[in-house]
Length: 190
Image 1: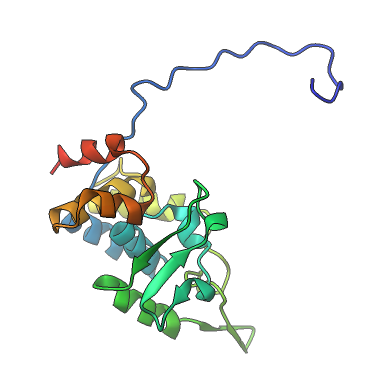
Image 2: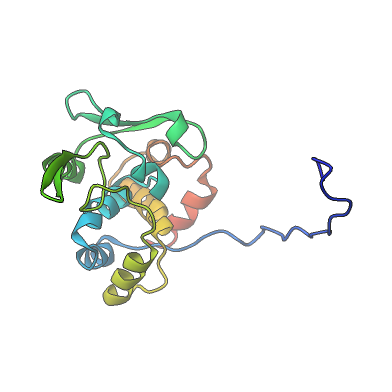
């Protein structure tokens, strides 16, 4: 319509988003069962999500320029963040081992040629992590958590941080949550 290519456009009623708040959540034990059922090249990817609450696309976009200060911090640039706001996470706890393993996984072989991955998280052949729905669903089913979405790791991560005495606003800053509305729901599921 804006380009004057159509003379008519059907009316499409927008559905209400009230009551459409995601509520999926998992605990550490269930997540570990899911993680163990994932393909090897997705385990660190999922662990990073469970530890930071970052979105799948944000994690998939990380390259080695994001890992800074001698592997002390990972900085997400604004152009990589869904909301356009960059943020960072200190590399501590499980993230230390993840970064170490990912550095070891940088060299990969394709057709007998060794190449170096520029992405922190990549598939075994060096390709970017894209659609993980089938692998995620299979791992969740095997772990007895069939309704869990990958995106549910965001709330789970914030809840785990708050339980570990990280102030809620700091946890929200790490995960990229802008309002406490979705985060507070998690605390009721503990």
